[in-house]
Image (cartoon, rainbow, N blue to C red):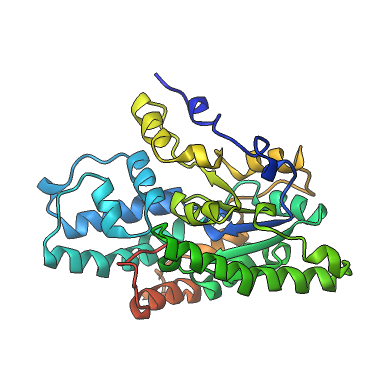
Length: 327
């Protein structure tokens, strides 16, 4: 039987010339700073149950759902990776409608700050590494980070469009390279200039000096092809040989692989240091991210601006990428 340790050795952070030093810039997808495991599995389970008859739903483990989710942002492809039969036109339509709605209602309240996230950010700041958080919804990302008390540790929130970076076609790579030159480099130059860095040093940033971190493999393929270091936070904790084989076949050899953000922090910074332990489900984060949806005394639903915004975006946004929803 394979163990979790069998999934860990595929790290190349210090095995190539491009990765012999710590990155100067960290591009963290929002999901890397959040604990979304329960939110993801609940959303997929309940979405499938709403769209399909019980007889058409195979037995699905949480690990299978997480692996499928890590491979594609498109809910139709997630369903396909899970071995579920082809959908009818009506089922396809209902799937695209209910997936973001169920995430906003049932998944979003289960999103918390990842363990040791603030320590990771503090150590990166202490070493002068610039930090950008990438999200397909920058407004929600800003609100989340503020409510979780870590917004001050982030230098920039950058928009990313999953439609632009998935699947990893030459056109997608070209678009991502354009994002590098039009958004990431100007931000780096302006920030380092404000910090008093010499202009000659600012121009030395190359893709190999940036690391993209995500819990989703699909976030990493195009940046890797663009020359950046990439790190996959593997939230798939199955210990069976089948789980390990599935993960090993997912091109993880191309990325640094860790089980949690703290492990990447140790690789990059050595031992993590912080003023205090993270309260992953502190009163502040629970109140900000997962408030009670119903006031029993008054018998009315309580307004939640963050969750309402998520639902509004899911309704109004043009999902050119077939109903995907990712943080």
